[in-house]
Amino acid sequence: MQAQMLAPAAVLVLWSLIMLLWTAGTRFPAMAKSGIDLRQAKRGGRGQDLEGVVPDSVQWKSHNYTHLMEQPTIFYPTVIMLAVMGPGALDVAMAWAYVFIRIVHSIWQATVNVVAIRFALFILATSCLAALAVRAVLATLLHDPSVVTG
Image (cartoon, rainbow, N blue to C red; front, side):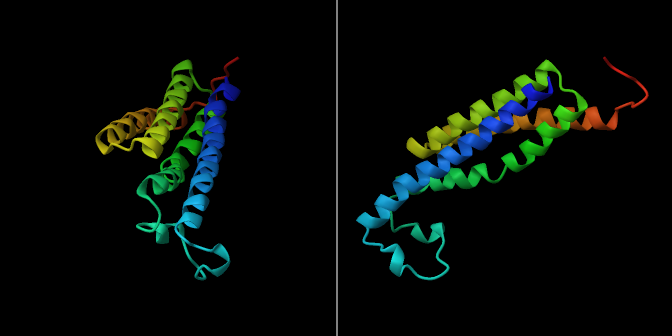
């Protein structure tokens, strides 16, 4: 079951890269339309410098990509801990639920971006992550190495 526990993390990594491509695919054309020439851009410029320069709907993709670099950074080690300790079916289901909800959250934020719905999706995903974190604590804290499981 270790591979099944790691699969959701692999999918979230892939999704994060898809969001990066979506960000670039919408941002560069919007920058060109706004008259921004990357060859003459100010040194050390950052994506957040584009706030108010390109349409908000373009920036939503970037905002979501940033979010995928935040909370999921604690999802990944949690999944690894559980994979090492021997996950249960519920652990795998919660990891998949987290990833599914994060993908829905991404699509919502990148397209519609009604904050009340986005926040509800965030809370649902965070609840899954919290359950996984508790399971990881229990699996590691209560682990008895003298018990051999087959």
